[in-house]
Figure 1 (cartoon, one colour):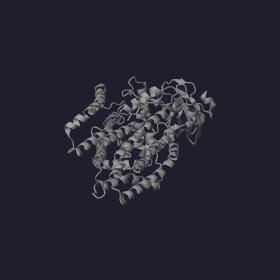
Figure 2 (cartoon, helix red, strand yellow; figure 1 turned 180 degrees about the horizontal axis):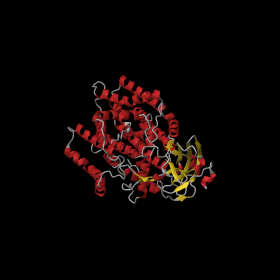
Figure 3 (cartoon, helix red, strand yellow; figure 1 turned 90 degrees about the vertical axis):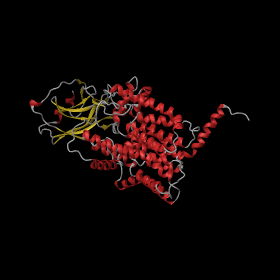
Figure 4 (cartoon, one colour; figure 1 turned 180 degrees about the vertical axis):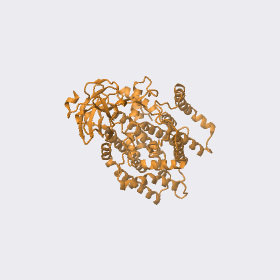
Length: 574
């Protein structure tokens, strides 16, 4: 018998790989479906609307400029507003990766934010592929895997977050890789594990260098996994098998945090504290805080909770959302403690138990630290369900993995499928309509307060020529001046920081740029001009005031001002 040639061997390898994954085609199709759903957010959500997107982009900009591709944890500011320091205290891996992408492709973080969103989306899709592989290791049927993936489409925040610039997306990939590596390792003997342990190692490094909350989850997962296997563990075999992997994790993770601690004096350095420590007068007790935590998390769970805070659900279908999210978890609790319902031969009971216990322990830690910092700064912060996005759809898999075939399992699966479909159709088709309504409702109101002569402070500002912009509406009626338009720093291809209303060289009011203007971006062929609109009203102006007594000026990123052309008062803009 003749040995196969090299091309034949390669064909044989790929043929085997395709054959082994052919039964997962439906599940992988659902990965593509979720990617397309998130793509609608990539293309249609206004820049800066997703949680902390401008802050993330600002660190990416630092990484692009840095010779070592690191964020500026000392003096970093928010793009378009040099007066506001960055407030994110996350580890740097996501920003470093995106910084390398930006350098290689010569991208600007503000102008090319859609490209960075696409890169983030690809991270989530890669994570979803590892979720599919993990479910396959748990011996789930392809139909069950596809159903669990489809259910993610019924959680509005899942696709919205996947389509934004956020380190949560790299985190999703890291957690999925790590959990897959452990599940794969459990299914193999020490000699046939292949790359599975190293996939777990890479995933763990990604998590530990991306976000502290999920790093805690992974520590708890390995802790519980070890405790649940304590009787089966063989210390010397374990040490021989895992010490090279542990050394690599310690080298990368420990090395970064040690160097950071020595250079900055902190484990998580940050240019600006988001909440400054202050004296909390009459703080609420722990039990009232716990009530606020639970009620707030449940209230925000069906929302797209970002800077826009959109509720896309039809009210009548919102109960279906809560029901389908909870149903597999309830099913797992019923199955797990029932000798007649559980598939007792499953080798993954301890893996699944460790995952659930790690999630529960992470929530307890979240509550404890949240209350601790509330007592320090008085803010009820961090109550965000998106912090646990990396648990979807993994959190739904244990029921499908452990439940024995029968009428109860079939009933749960059918009900879950119908509820997930109802949640999807009750939210997804309405999202962008609700988004438009929310943006329109964000029109700002400014109140004019005349200053006394002896209270007026004079400052000198540099003036440039007319700004690239236009006032679409400039109307004074009954003491209320309504201003709507757009402005953009075309010379430097940067957004303006804010717009001012001035009368006789005296400040009246100001407003940040806060409205998406796709028409402006299209006109200039520059995505940085997308966020260039404003819409606000100045109230309580003097009855004697005339519309053309006022002019609108754009504040550029460098602090200079420029008049915005006003067709209603052509003389004022000269």
